[in-house]
Length: 496
Image (cartoon, rainbow, N blue to C red; front, side, top):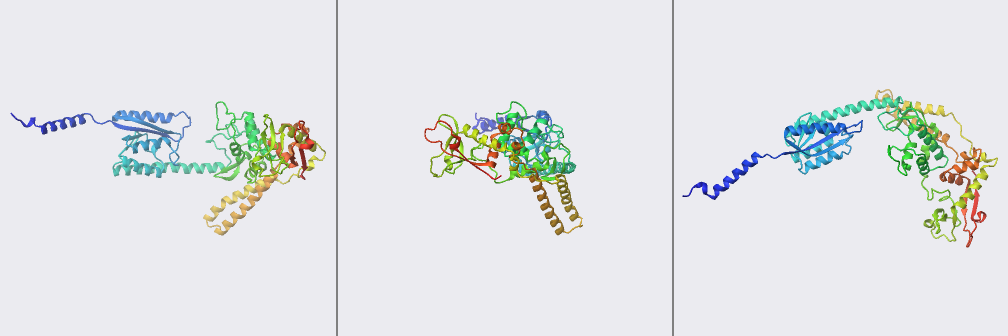
């Protein structure tokens, strides 16, 4: 006998009902992404983000959620919009639909920046992903109310950071004006950890580098010397030192630092004298900075040799360092810049030429009139110049306040700034001139000129040669087996 329960339609209804019941009995696990962040990890051990993760694990277990993704940004601020790799990865996972909720310690750990927060709210709205704070509210980003609360809470977070930043900036400015050493920054090269006392080895290296540079040395030569001394740059704070730990750019950054001359800075402006020990006089530092900023100063081919890029081939082209077919270092007419100049062109053993030129330099600078080769040293009261400059900077700093209070007119403020800046530039240029050092000074003032010459690096030797003479090298001639300095080397002495 037929019964409705036996019909195919009834069978399908029964199957659907059973499936729905099964689905209802087995709810889908909510997939959670856990994000941790801390702005400043003083200990550097990641304990802050680890504590946040432990709290998130407990929250996920209590809510029956499964953490399928964990991301963190340790020691990174969220206020400035700085790149946060962990944040970007967890937001990308949310946009792809790989997680249903994001667990954070507090909303302030996730967002501090207004633009980043607005963009993030929209991404989570489209993805239907909620934000759950283990120490704060749960925010449903699919609802207008949840997004509104997120925005309101976020504004409090942002304001808190901005107010703290304003206080810190004011404190930093006052500390700089008072010449206080900054403590919350990496230890500056040249000083002990207290930022006040000089580190003997590093400070000596900086002072020597300033003298070397002003005496014709090169940044590359200074970097090699610091490598030889085993000095450690901030980029390699521990472990074995790389073969070439120092680069020219690192040396430049250290030598340009006003701290070297005891100058306190705030936002790129000189604001006073620092409480720390200086490494070189201000006039020396300003001479170094002026030299490094000189656009005519550039790298020259052969900078690792004494004459490469300085001496000339008989054809008028500069020579460069090369290697002969027998593997010997030689000076050769630079083929890249010959430009069709007729030969024959020079190729001479580097050791022979360097020895001969060195002998000429030592002989000339050992003469009784060698001191006459140096220009008379400029004389001025450097302390008075430094005091005048500081007074001008102080008055320039007060002009804005006087204008705001209505005590001076705008034209007076603009004119005062222009006159003050012109005089400051004159003083700084004058101090730089006073700090200059003749490239000949290390040799002319030496008791033993030959010994002083031998300890100089090739970069400083080339500066001495370039100051004293023009060197032209001639081919030795076919079949020549013995070096003939009189035939190969022509020297024209300069009027120094």
